[in-house]
Length: 319
Ligand code: BMA
Image (tube, rainbow, N blue to C red; front, side, top):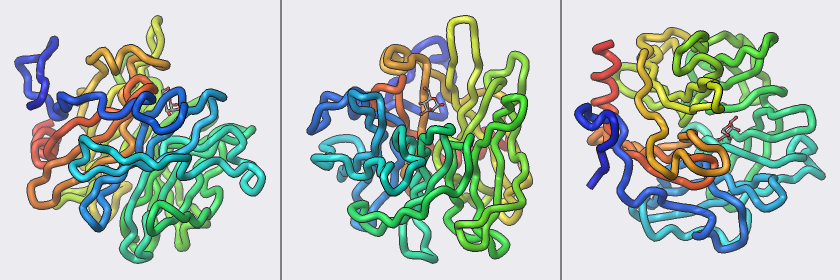
């Protein structure tokens, strides 16, 4: 069912690409767009999988559109018009679009929290919206000032406070992953570096950022992150794993040295921005640990990879 070939065929990939990849592209969209990629994902209460895709129209500006499917792979029903469009009149920070949503269900609020990049005239920043149905949204506005992106909440308070993983740009253009806390989802403080880019020749040398929201496991919070290496030919976006302490997620239990997924298939290598795999969401089966990781491929289409949380934890624990 899954492809597992290429230069590393004799190793078992932690992420196995679906044969049907890419599962969604601009040609599937009910209205004319340039590209669809980097989707947030969630399982809805009726069992359907919802993706909130980044859709770039032919002005270059992005909005978010929902697609729903029973099996999470085929027969997507896509909203006939943008589900969550930039609203620069009321939210000037959305002047150049909204991008890269991460969705987390918050049982305490009985709502889904969507953290997304609002592309403001002063650079990208993190905004928050809440929804119950992905039809109406309560915009909470800016939660991290520019430049900042790649943010997701934890699904529950930790030590009484909400926690947010995000990726600010610090002086010297340093792009490390940070963790911040808030009593009310609005005022954020106690920010610290969670994971640093490794500089030099590392695959995650030049910048890193959270992919999909952290996954709660018995061993800790599993974090899938992207690492970027700048080469003479451009950038390569690859994926790595880290494990954070359950009670104190500022504490890293493990960080894998090697990447676990790298652009390889034609749809990941050729596109508007080649050599990019960029997940923003996943659906996890808690009983089996099976995970479907949804990712943007080359900023042009949406693909899915299958894996298992237990395999990932085993891999990390052996590091
Ligand atoms: C990042 C983000 C992503 C994009 C990636 C590759 O900075 O803007 O949305 O997929 O670059 O272009």
